[in-house]
Image 1 (cartoon, one colour):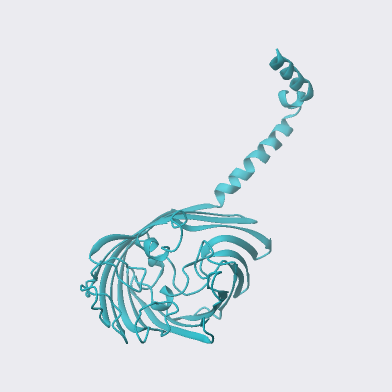
Image 2 (tube, helix red, strand yellow; image 1 turned 180 degrees about the vertical axis):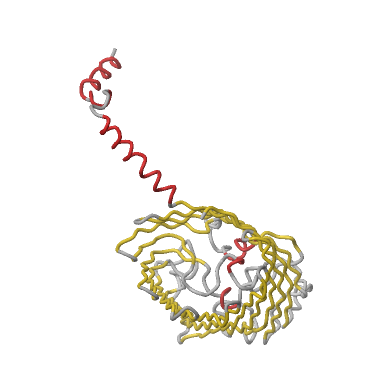
Length: 373
């Protein structure tokens, strides 16, 4: 009986909810209001699947089959998955978002410090347009530092350069960005240097300024400033600058120059420096073929980023040669040879306590990419 009384009361209070529209126009307008948002949403939605498989041979044959001082390729003498990625993006006139889940040896190496629950997160961000060309984004995002991307197929060589490996792949925070003609800029408030979960109460600052000087030359400067010490230790402020230039010398020949410089407070006082550089060239000599080369050097004598436990720290340089063949826009085969030499014996070998100052590596990979742009 109480249920019947309640039903009668609802019918009395809300007759419009149970009656037919008075006019066809009203129904048409209602349909538009309901349908338009979903139609606009699907128009702005895109998705991407990326699979990066590889086989690498390290001529030092590291005893645990894990290559040191790199994130990709990580494993020696093993058919392996570097990165498996599923991502979705949405962008409309006023809002945008990006979410991706990842797995692979890259994740194993580069996100080892994150809680297991957060390691599969490739990206998780949302943004709103504040003014024309001005966006505010927040969440886990690709790094604003460096000329090289997380996805190997978007780089000129399969392996990442030393300067790229020792700068952030991703970052977590808030980003204000905008573009005006051939200039774009960004300011960021971040948890820190490549982390999802913060390791202290301090926040870091970042900036980026890019200039497309002309159809051939683009220039970029990115910076970072933040305390990287845990809360129970004295502050250790890190200051970092990344500069790069990309120049299209010919329609099929591109050049890239990168220079990074960093400083970090020592616990006992003063600043510890590190720096690195990379020179790259890529020649698309046929419709499906490309050849790329790289020279590089990285110096971190006080082991701020790369710990070696040796007198001279991490001071190493080398060269790479990479050949690409694109089966289609969705499939890319690559082979790369790389050699590095260091001041100290730092590269693992087949004998656990007998590292080598030299390292040579050969890697071949097949990457597949599918999606809805």
